[in-house]
Amino acid sequence: MTILLCLPLCVWAQQGEIGIFGCNIRANKLKVSKTDCCVEVRFMLNLDSLQLKSNRFIHLTPALINGDSVFALTPLTIAGRRQNIVHQRNREDSFLVRRNNDKKQTFNYLDTAPYKEWMNGSRLELAQDLCGCGGTLLDQDMIPLKEVFFEVPVYHVQPVLAFIAPKVEAVKHREESGRAFLDFPVNQTKIYPDYRNNHTELEKIRATIDLVRNDSNTHITHISIHGYASPEGSYANNRRLAQGRAEALKQYVRGQYNFDNRIFSVQSTPEDWEGLKRQITESDLEKREEVLEIVSLDMEEDAKNFRLQQIDNRKTYDYLLQHIYPSLRHSDYTVAYTVRAFDVKEAKRLLHTRPQLLSLDEMFRIAATYEIGSPEFKEVFDIAVRLFPDDETANLNAALVAVSEQNYPRAGRYLEKAGDTPEAIHAYGVFYMMTGQYEEAEKFLVQAKKAGVTQANENLKQLYLKIENEKQIQDN
Image 1 (cartoon, rainbow, N blue to C red):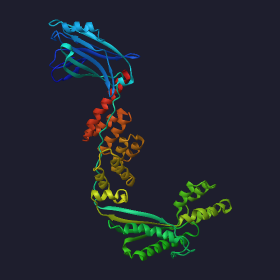
Image 2: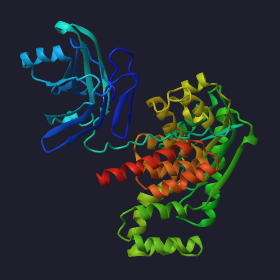
Image 3: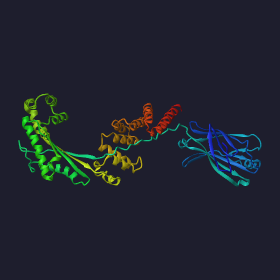
Image 4: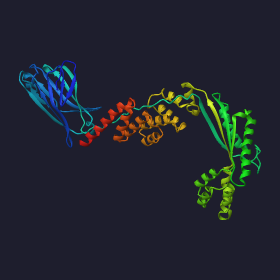
């Protein structure tokens, strides 16, 4: 270490030697080590080139510093002839070296300090004072010498993430769907709005349509109605009821809104055997397996219905009639519509009220107005993947948000639906790097780099640093 006492300091360190350019004291073999309870600091001062006047001295104090915590080790005083005599008389608590000008001279500094936890990760610095006759301070400075680690510090990877912009949705097509359980008198297809619970069910349908119709940002393009009947009775009659009741709902809606007949489509399923199978599978019905076996038979519907009636003297069938079949009589409806495009300001207003009107591209442009990694930034991508759960871009960006939150199980689930684009391959590489799967990480990051993902370069550098860091920790 070379110490400059009167000029600006420039510190360098290499292979245990620390120097300060433009000066004439050097310190070699700098070492800071830890025993069971102490910290040992040692270095060798080379004074060969130092010219020190008889009435001057240099006062050096090594110190360990970490934030507000400071421990000063034993000072070292390098004195000219007269100042050496003064310091000997005063018997100061410091190392004292008399400088013999024009002669080769070294001093091996060694001191210990009681170990404190804060010392791991501290800095070793050297306070220097140049003083004249009578102790007059002529110059002083603080010289950083070394970062002190008694254990190899853990290298924390800060991955560079590659979010991608979704494709622009030229025309935004959206749908609102629902299911109504309308009641009809036996064998009838006419809707009576005040019959049983029909008022509530019809209100559900009107609310769905009104949500779209009353929004100036949307335009209804199609309304589909699909009617279902339950399996009791003859298949032929159920076919008539299912289709007739679906047509009746269409006419009811047209009468309420005066829609053009051309925007409607009507379908029907005479008997909802799939719905029956689903509900029985999820139930704890005593004869569940026997019922499911009959439901799955490849035979005419009327024959299957008859077989169901034979189970345990019709007890199971009576249960189905009372508790299952009513829910199989339903009308499913879908309102299809288009949505106009929004600028970022408009899109932000809709994000928390009607996010389904936004495209992925519009959401991405919202996210771009926030700081990367901020809560607002992350929230946009969370909303996007909830609204577009099968979109590869939405899943990729959501996976990167999960990685940034260190929620790796969630990141893994999103990545499964993120596709195989170069950016998705890169995301897999980052995921494997952050979860300690370094061989897989390298393979995917190298592949992404070759595919032109520029962020892969930095992540590969960090991956190799992390691998080397873990080897050093193991060897320490």
